[in-house]
Length: 483
Image 1 (tube, one colour):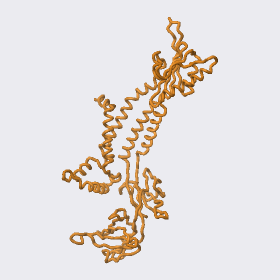
Image 2 (cartoon, helix red, strand yellow):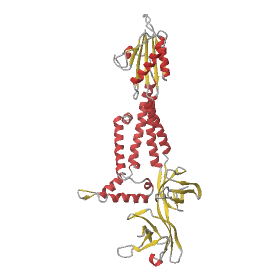
Image 3 (tube, helix red, strand yellow):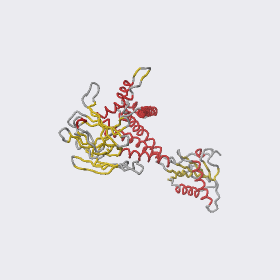
Image 4 (cartoon, one colour):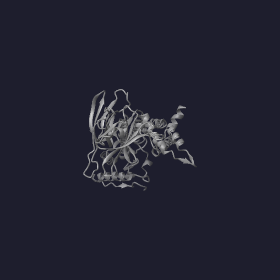
């Protein structure tokens, strides 16, 4: 059983099957709408986001039969709206990681033997001029072989030498063998590539399982917890000040937030954050992401007591206009607020009071327009005096904790190292055999080596050195191709 599992995990067909299944899953994750990461940690956000997705399927029908709600429910159960964090996707990635590890362990001994064991002595047929990258120098002697060794060392080859004596009953001269090897162990660089793939997958899994992401909208002066209320040592984030300066043409030149972070009532960090210049605190990164309008309201009850004083974020949209909602503290009355403009382009708030059903078919209690700096008459706004103090803005931040980031960076470096070594430093080997007065050469290069060009350049260097010897005029016989 164990050997069968091992063979399966090292099978090329099984690897292709795994990659194909993951590719199909990736297509689902790309084509279908995906739940944002923060919704996976917040039940209310999950319900809200799923409501949006389900509404997009409401009109889906096949042969006149409305199957949209059924399809949406099935896809949700299968995890198709959160593919990259679904348990089955994590399982597929885990199996792929195990397969890569097993394949690496299975192939490493053979790779090591191939790289480490070298054969210096080659038989005479190996130097046949009819083979590619072969050459022969005539009228050669030991000095010619020494010059070849010098050329190889100059090209950063590691040179080894063996002399094979003739049989005792023969009067033939010993045969001198030279072997040059450059980048002998670079084949093992594929281990860096494998390690990089493993760490990429491991880093993604760690982030999926232990990572955290949420989106926070804050008006100026407002605070919000980073994690759920009640989390030990929870961080609290505060929008101290937000500004979005404009250019002369009215376009925004920048937007930035003076952000403070607290733990247990003590400020632990503060920074003005911008896009691409976040604040990092204890593994959390606070990214400036967006901004929008807000309305500073003061609301007083019938007795003149202040029940609300602060910004209302107009982060929604209604009919193409910024919209927000607030429930008046201590009451069941909600205010739906829309930012509009009058005919003369003056900003105004359209406030709709929503409460218990006021008539048989509506829960609208009142509808009131309010200008900047003005206060409503209490009878017209359900007994509350609503003052629009100032036009303001809110900041939107993405807060992330990515515990797998370190692994991802190590994976990136490992993968790039493996690829760079494999592509730019492939192995080259040269064998030479000094037999009588013949110096025979054979050259082999791995993939990505222009073997013919490199061998010709090496022959040119050797020819120059041999011609410079006193009373030497040696010429190579044969070439890099068939004789």
